[in-house]
Image 1 (tube, one colour):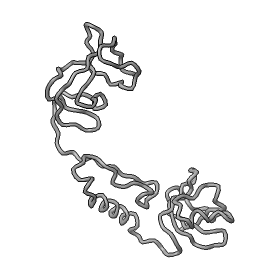
Image 2 (cartoon, one colour; image 1 turned 45 degrees about the horizontal axis):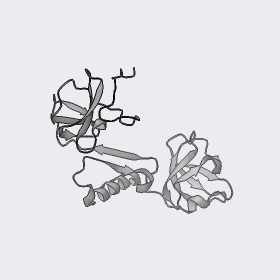
Image 3 (cartoon, rainbow, N blue to C red; image 1 turned 90 degrees about the vertical axis):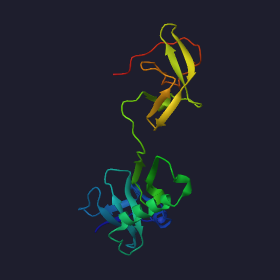
Image 4 (cartoon, rainbow, N blue to C red; image 1 turned 60 degrees about the vertical axis):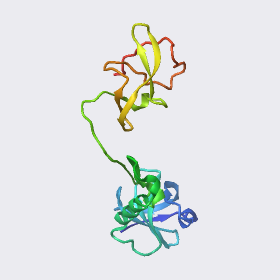
Length: 200
């Protein structure tokens, strides 16, 4: 295993279990170490402090995965991923949700690694839908009346939805223009408005 040696006095954060070794703390690195290699981190006095993933072009030179002088287990990463998934599986508050972060980097002792999952519970092709970002609390959307040039706030009946799209079960017709730029100042029922062409 390639080795990285710290500057004198720069081992304090590693000993306190900080997950990163920053570039300014590094005194030397074995010449053969490449991006993604697992390297052993040593203090200036030669004490083995642990191991981690090496990134030569990042300000975070090493993301610590293992502490101490012992060799890490070969299945270290897969074991920690399995433990992270098991913790979430045991959390009753996460049951029934459609998307979550299975692996959350430093929080799961896997700095630099995250994994998200979306569970597809049901699909319905060829249905009328609107962007979920356009839907306000209470299942309401602003629609543009092209003849009057004004916005109208209306209620509709949604079907299934995810983070991107919401099915329209009733209350909106195909071709209706809905407002997606809800963050703009002045959006309100009855105000004058016009549709803008999407950015190229």
